[in-house]
Image (tube, rainbow, N blue to C red; front, side):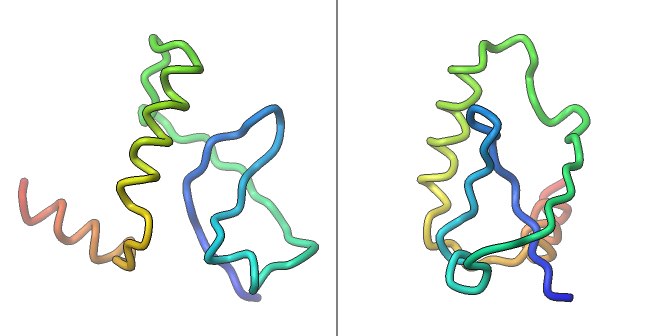
Length: 78
C-alpha cells in the first residue's frame, strides 16, 4: 500500500489533496482522519484559522523537506 501524510483543513466536509499527490492518486483513496490534539487554537473563529492555514500553505509551496527533516530541525532549535 502506498501512503502519504499531510495536514489540511476540511472545507464544507471536503478534504483538499495537495496538487503534488493528485497525479499519483487520481481516483479512489482510503482516508483516515486523525484529530490533531492541541494543534488548533479553538478560540479563533473558523475563518481566521483557515486564513492562517492558507498563509502558511502559501509559504511552504514548493518546499521539499520531509517530515523527518522538519522534525529534526525543530528539535535541534529547542
